[in-house]
Image (cartoon, rainbow, N blue to C red):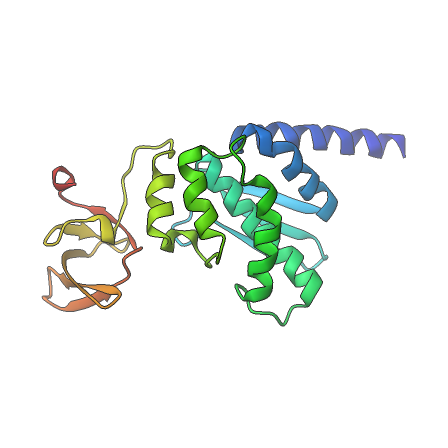
Length: 217
């Protein structure tokens, strides 16, 4: 029994040390307590293009949360609480709820509220976060103002940009290697032309792409 306790203690200390690397300092202890209380297996992985993080309940009942390692510490915190909200909402309301429905939104708001303070987030981010959490969306990337503010804290040189950031007429490359020319906005999406075929496609403004003319940005 004593041996198991020592192993658990060592694991807890390692996890806490890891969190200091990825989270704002003042958020580490409350996040660690949430992870410990809910029995979360937190896995930090290489960047995935389609998502910042995800939550799943494993076949043995354990809760697993996976988060991209390349996120800045403020985005990492938001993503962690976002995924914890899925866990908590599911346990409270049942598995039949919508992934990003009202139950998840209210849970996310409640869990995130204690972190929305200047000791954790820079003041220039807080104003955007307060607005965002009045009605949090499935992906914070769809919040243009918050996304651009968050970008200022990325620790890696930008390689990809959102389509809405590119000038009209500029060329960009999608993840599958196709080259497009950005056109005008049609309602909520941009009409873009595939250079090799001349075919037109409507592309989401928050699609991440690689610009081919960086000097135009």
